[in-house]
Length: 126
Image (cartoon, rainbow, N blue to C red):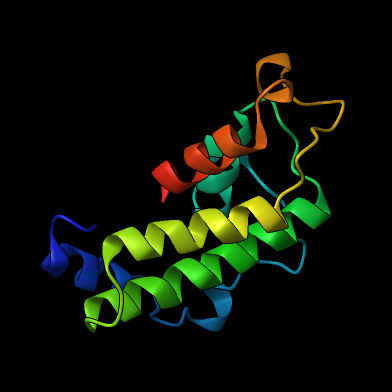
């Protein structure tokens, strides 16, 4: 997004258009990493891979990061933040919100990953 401000503006505008009541998702927040369609789904896929089953706590943290990402992109588009600051801000939040230890159902390659590596993977997905 940082390389094309016009595209970033259009994408964020489309992202924030309210959906019609019949298009609203159900009340059950589930990660569908096999068919990632929302930003939290994509963040989970980038951070932990398709074999991971995201917990409710992780899902809440990803939603908080989604809100931070959205407000940060708006601040960047309005000239209040640099892309580098936005990235640092998201990495800072991801490091504190996402668990450093993996759950037992994560893939082994991700279970051994350092927390810093996980935040880099997450930030690159954003």
